[in-house]
Length: 113
Length: 114
Image (cartoon, rainbow over the protein chains, first blue to last red):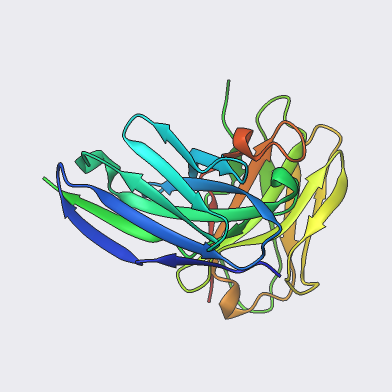
């Protein structure tokens, strides 16, 4: 079955710096890749997603890139702010998201003011 | 619109007991998925229900079961609890199967097994 690896597991940056989170997936049939942000005491919240027919997607300070050949995708956060501090999860699914989501193990991002 | 509601928020049980967790989806959402979240394994898919039918199932033992009612509310049950079942159990709802970009998670139920 699908396996999603996420690196690094923790990242600490200074406010204003950029942060990059990388994920790899194993199943070439996966074609939907969402990113979730989980704040303390809350459930994960979808922040951005990308489908396999798109190489990059941006939404304000966040962007996601997808390399289907290498089977990896990344989340980029620019101009980080303390409120960006959270755990970030990548995930993958087949059939445009109609199959179950397989998650990476998460990355704890700390933005220091 | 109210979000996904999970009850109870915290639960303490002992080994061998059973537990039932409840999830009320967002109004109009017909798909409910359950996930187990632990520090070591991250988020793992348990099962998904859509219109009272189990649509997908993860790789968990038969001690984990669920159901969905006609009003889309869902319950999951864990029988013969083990220490390793201690986790945050998350429920997520979306309007229909496949609409992951419209999926919302609840705050979770923190289960501690002693």
